[in-house]
Length: 477
Image 1 (cartoon, helix red, strand yellow):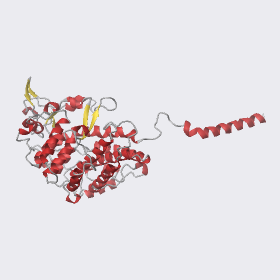
Image 2 (image 1 turned 135 degrees about the vertical axis):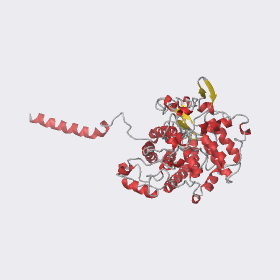
Image 3 (image 1 turned 45 degrees about the vertical axis):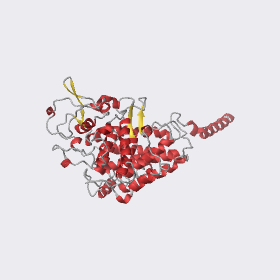
Image 4 (image 1 turned 180 degrees about the vertical axis):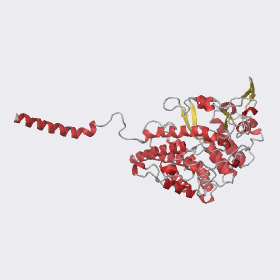
């Protein structure tokens, strides 16, 4: 019995030791990723940012910028500049969600010393923070997405600090790309692991953001933009529509339309008179791609919209106005992050201001590309129309850029705030003294969830969380 007991103890110690030695290996879950690679996060980040941008373009930008109008809507509504307190909540939450993932992607790329993925992470970080700060003004950045480090109430950074950081990051990213080093992981859904196109996206975004802050003369933004344009080898940018940052939604899960019910895209919605009237005057080929024709009973009457912020009852409109073509949000579809047409119009503005040459060339390139990205062709004689023929004004460039930025997240609104163009009609039914809002309210729970940061943000905004407080780069009266 003593021998048996001793043997049992020896065997127990042996197996206990063996189990201890193999415990970590045995305890691994085969259904979970043991180590995150940069590519593990990249596609979800791209899709998340793109789909949110498309959704907010429809929900917010279209209303503010008189692309569409909810109908019927006899009072209130964003198209009347009636801005609700919680309207920015989803963008705040969404951007910070993906910024957390971008931070992890950057860490994984840095750990592997993979410069291409590091450059992509820096680019996506700049893209997300730019939209976030342009929506609200000061936001947390340097200490943001740091809950794992115990920072639950991050301080806010000024918009000037944020732009200084992200522009520096884009400059760095441009130097990191290695065209001779392939992206070793699965193909990304935006550029298919084409490093050259990723680099062009980085520099095209750099141009967008420099132009955004160009009203601040101390930034020397126009001079920096000129340097970029004049050095295409050092700063390659999009050169045609095919190179654009346009996500091709395949309709194959998980890369599917953000509209689970495409019919909701045009449910109780009409296209604005302002948006269609310009296209009608130009005899523009984009109309049938974007809009349905209006009708009275069974008779079509062409493309006719509803005035944004209309006063009075909806019964005043005796026709069934144009609404959106549903194909735009059905699988397969496109989501626009930064198209070549935008780059062309940036160059057109630089030329119009005298920093580079050939303003008419860049203008016509932008118009043509804006049609191409929607699947339309530039008609012969389009520029024979005095309204479309280049007249040398910034206003004409911006009205065409307005259409180039159709469905590009918040960019129409941001560019309006920067330039005051296009000139949008106002009505007596508008709220806010018929003034375009300059920003969104902070999320309604921020004053409780991050009280010190919220107080700091208000100080930077002049003491109040108000939609008429201009952000740092917005100097237009």
